[in-house]
Image 1 (tube, helix red, strand yellow):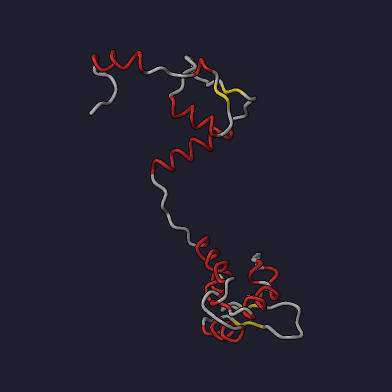
Image 2: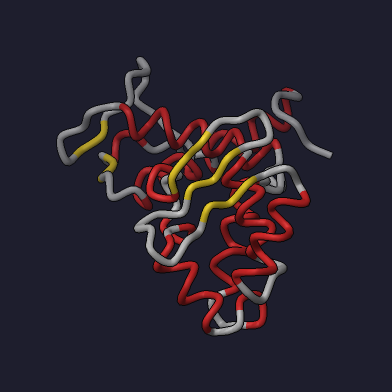
Length: 165
């Protein structure tokens, strides 16, 4: 929570003084003295944390000093703070199809392969989409692994198999 709050406030303040004041307005104490090596943050519940323990380079003392010297939220560095804020609250724009594709891709990536891929199915056949996915990952697919739909399409249409609209 401290990291998110510090990024959020740094993203909308122009100076060190504004940053400290706004952090304190949200219940956080900021010990940022000229003769100290680190900034020490104190959370509303009393936990203390130095800037180097937050695992965020943008919140290190030297980087914040540069950020505020250049104008804070009005500087060119402000995009880095906005980027972090966007990563902390990602937008969910993934569709079901994307999710299934990523799941399938992850499964395929976890299977060890030796330059060629022979599917573990009995008839060793894959559809064209699967072959394209495998090839985009740099995996060569043996010719016998391909499914040829053109020969079976007419027969399936006559028998009512498959999905046609």
